[in-house]
Length: 344
Image (cartoon, rainbow, N blue to C red):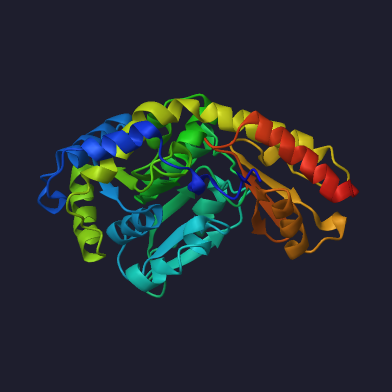
């Protein structure tokens, strides 16, 4: 049976070019700064984002948590959207590792209102925590892969500068955001002090994420990476795939966006399925199936019977398009969904 895996773009497999690059990678000891392939990847990343320096990391979660650790002190407070990945899906790490608490704000489709941010900044008071970081997720996963508009980014950056509070972007899929906005990724990064982005997910590298920022800040982050066990040795084998990801895979993300739109429109035309089309901006589609009467277990099982894997996000299911999904797969999924809902 054909398998169409729409659970996430994390299921992407490295390309043949990546595998060949990994096999031939020149390596050294990265903890000593001697891995030439890591060094090349870090330099390329910093230049792409218009920052002074970059740091290679095993995962995006580690990248976000090192960013928080490097920007804050214990007892501080960070401002964050209430459905953000850092708040929901990183195992309470901000509290456990950095000793900070989160001030959560409800955004519109995951996008924070700058006025709400400014109202949430703590005054200078010995009874209250210090607001030390503003975190933005772009694209925003739980909101459906939505993109933060540039004017909103600019306004938030101005607030950060006014109160001397740095801005960190959880940019796991920031290249999707840049594609949707039709701008170079450094345009988005210009409105943040630090950015984390993933080389895996839609870019297909098997492992790895990056942090970018100033040279001094990245050196502090490097020390925190070591403390968390993220110091690696001959990691150039992994960086080689990351170089291919940045050189070859960022420019094809528009295809994933087109497929997501095609999927959303097709599913939204099926009775009893509902999609907020405003949120379909990149490569994610969230489907409300509550009117079908099917339980989460039942609808997942029905899709699996057709060889389709979906991500449960009760009361929704999520479908994510990526390098491994074709237009034929999209059409097959729409027809399968129609049969599941309509009893065909």
